[in-house]
Length: 411
Image: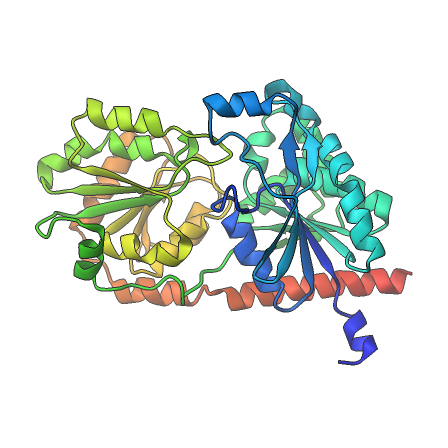
């Protein structure tokens, strides 16, 4: 490729405090999946600031998963990842994360800029990451993009954070939203509508594909005479709603005595309610119904999904739950709550059922109806295949190229 062609390829630095590393291999996989695909078209480097304060090692003795230490540097799939530390006190001190994140990452980004590896700073989540990125972009003289991923909804309920969100959106050169509902939410708060582009996540249909249900159940050690199998996949945190499903299982078991529920996931930076969930299962006498599988690597997740009959996520908030497409790519219908972009993914009743959040009776009725229904699995698979990554990545690459061209013309 000639030099002028090479110059049209902007060098991206992906900026996100949530990114997988050796100590937390399951963190931020959805960001890596998206941006490493972009990295096949454009040169990328990742800077993932890690929160730190002097006493956090003591907290980790009581909570082993708390702020799992990250290396200084890693190479993943040929991409360099840097993990600079920034000062971050827990609880009330988190209000300063945007400022300290920018301070902690500045030296790393300056070094990348001097090496000719920073044309666009691409942040994920508005606060603290996007807010810090806009401060850094202003100092370094590079354009900034922010991807809105769903945390913006709860953050906006707090006046101080809402001001930081709006400040970041107005300072950024380009905004991506993973769902239309999230874009509309941001515009209503004051984000510039002309800078927002909706680019949802896609699904890797090579990684997520169905295998025969009997084989999948054998591989998981499920009983051959097991009844219908429900599955949820996500971090074991309050927001994801595993407990909201578990509380309905005694009633569902009355009609389907052999029903099973696979709870796939583990702790995350957002929290860990594993002990509460296990206590709930024991209190309800569901030890033979609920199986906690722990985290399952993405390349193996098609096995428990193929073993199930129905995917359910009784979530409190989502931007774009990519796990819905992953479940559909394995032929599963979805039952979920009407929050965030969920209705945009489960967009018709051929794919699943969407119920009001917090309505336990509606959730129960939807699960019962879904278990009784004869679903058109082929239609579900076709929908998932129509939402592969190709179109999404092409839109992102073109947006980055266009932003870079504008910057070059401006100079």
